Length: 541
Image 1 (cartoon, rainbow, N blue to C red):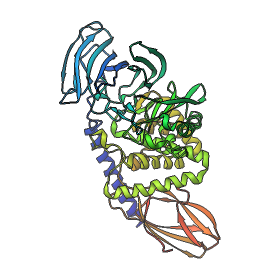
Image 2 (image 1 turned 180 degrees about the vertical axis):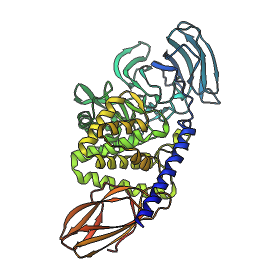
Image 3 (image 1 turned 180 degrees about the horizontal axis):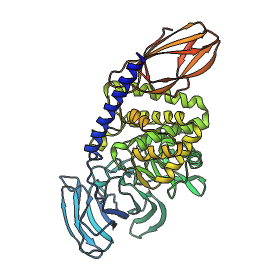
Image 4 (image 1 turned 90 degrees about the vertical axis):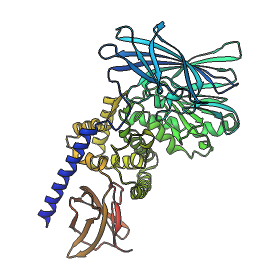
């Protein structure tokens, strides 16, 4: 039976690998439908925006500096065109200072360069009312406000840009707004000038390359304060004046989180770390250096520390080391989920890690029952659909299992090398795998294929008995589509004390013999929360 099960397992692995290989060969990154122009590299944006109180119409001017990897070629910028009340009208496009050759069709500004210069700057002037992306509304206290909320591809509603994370660029925001507003934006504030006409110009500049999904502005009446400084990086809180003290209190923990991640992972990439109470469709949005948190995050009770840790973790994973394809968004969300847990473990101890992972395990199991799909789901074409329990909680669990597989020292060495290699760049899952293989000296193809590209998780039926100095444990994997291979810790509990043994599960059904001088009072599978599985049935309590 053992030989037959091994052959069956090997045949299954071969078939699964071939299917995955064929799928990747045919689809590659094609499932991410954005037409990437690999010859064009946006170097820098200057976004000039004029806001007013009389209407929701904005006046915009984008200056975009383009570098060509070979020769100058036609390219396109995203900008949603006017349809009914919403959208933008383009009034002028310049190539350097001359009229550019362009068309504006189906939300694309298509530009044909007139010169062969390797680097060129284009200017696009436009106006209109954005339907999304820039949220023009009022705060929960009734004050008028403007908040950038671009994730995943909503920048195109108000910023002429390459609105996809594969092409990142440094950015400057030049915001002209009525002078009673406070303005925060991506980057470091380099100018604030009253224009003597009731308006104020505020300029922020971020030299690190940033994807449009995490560029932002916040314009309203703020109370702001520097709540810390970490290795020369100012940490600030931007909150509504009506809950000023509560907001400063809640967001101050950001400095402690920032310090932990810098020391654990590597240098922080951005000019500042601002924490902003905002109107956002999300609980938190990890805008580069200017994080937005939902309005009711401010309570004065420090209830959002895990959320703050999650969004700050994104500054390394998702913002700096950025997925090149939307289908690999677990490199952003799974990492932020697990690194938030790592921060909580560091502050509150390993029991907190186990508690967080136990909760996430329950959510993963429940999600799979109605959404049987892998973490890297090559069938998804809409970036609004890539976020799920898979990309967050299950992605975090994969990192937890990888940490256990490699050991703490190797795991952290690999994480630091991965970040150093892809800082301010783009990455796919294979790139992460290769770094971890190089650092660990282990082949990890089966691990990555099994947990990231294969749907589901082990569903275990198990029982045990004690005889002649041995615990005999019977395990059977009940899921029909795949047989998982994984290590599994077994806790032998006697008089309130637990002895840990580890078995290697590598077949559909198998008996394991564990030497034990005593008959356990009970047995616990995975007492330390290291392996993702579901218990279908087991010994009755």
